[in-house]
Structure formats: C-alpha cells, structure tokens
Length: 243
Image (cartoon, one colour):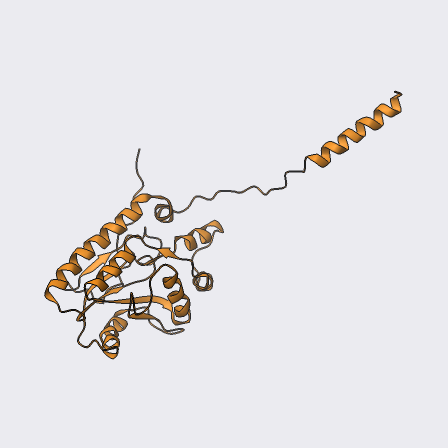
C-alpha cells in the first residue's frame, strides 16, 4: 500500500469517528440555590409533618365543636394557597429565573391548575363534612381565577357542594385584600343554600390576615407554616440547622 492510500484511509477513519460520535451540545444546567423557605417546603419532610400536625389539632377542635352544635349550624373558613393548595412549584420557577411574584406570572400559574394538596387538608375537610359542618374557602386569588381554582381543587379531589359550599375570591381590579368583609358574607351565603344561622367556629390559614381583623381572642385560628415564602406569614420562618 503506497503513502497516498494510507493517507486516504486515515482520513476516512477520522470522518467515520466524527459521524459516530455526535458533539455534546447539551446546555450546561446551572443549579440555583433556593431560598430558605422555598427549599424547606419543597425538600424537607418536616414541612409536611408540621402541616399534618396543625390539621390534626384542628380536627380535634371541630370534633369537640360537633358535640355541642347541631349538624349544619357551624362552619370553618380556610384560606386556599399554602393552606389547601401547595404552590411551591410556582415559587421554584420564579427563583430559577431570578424573579419574584408578579400578578401576570401568578395568573398564568393558576391557569395551569397544577397546584397540589397541602398534607392533611383534604382529610380535615372530609372530617368537617362528616361531622355536619360546612367548609368555606376564602382566598385572595382574583375572581378571574375562580374557575381555574375550582378546577384545580377538583383535580385533587375537592368538589364544590360535596367538600366545600362557599368559595370567595378577591374582586379585581379594586377589591380589597382584607378578608374580613368576605368572612362576614359566609353565613348569608350558607343561609341562601338552606342553612340559616351558621356560625364560623374556626379559621385556618398561613398568613396573619387569614382570620378576621382586628384579631380577637375569641377567634380560633390554626396556622399553617408556609416557610415565610410570601405575605405576612403567621408562623416564624424556619431557622437553618447549625452543625
């Protein structure tokens, strides 16, 4: 074999090798450290355990209420976000692009209807209904997001009329974030459904304003720890573990 033939054979081998081994064009993924609260909710089993503990305490309370109240005469009012539905995936997305909450991004998130259940919420709601109580959901989600919210709730097994009888959103664009006037409307809405004289016996939420304002010592409030992700949380942000 002459020199020119050897050269051509070598070039052919190089070409075949190049075709058989495609270049590595996959983009490099830069992992972004999540904020303390978001990481706690997303990755620490303690978050779920604490939520379940709160709902267990609330269950004990309504079981006591049911012993002294006739069926159909009492109700509980729950917030939705980080109380019934867990939106930590939204928070993760925002932090991955270096952004925080915006009404536009939140509106898009609610349209996906992909929030998951907060541990313990469904069992608590089911128990309230078994005991003869009513469930009212009072949220600062916009009224333009109400249908998506109901569909998201249905996707995790919580249906209107079967699991909750009232769902009150925040009127847009000028509705107040103060939930107190909406809490006051709940008994009238239940009366219109055939349940007059209903008393709200407990409030459950993750923010300080998920209960009537001003705060009264007579109101029974159960606080879900959402890791201080946003708003004015009713629980202290979890502290890092020191080694």
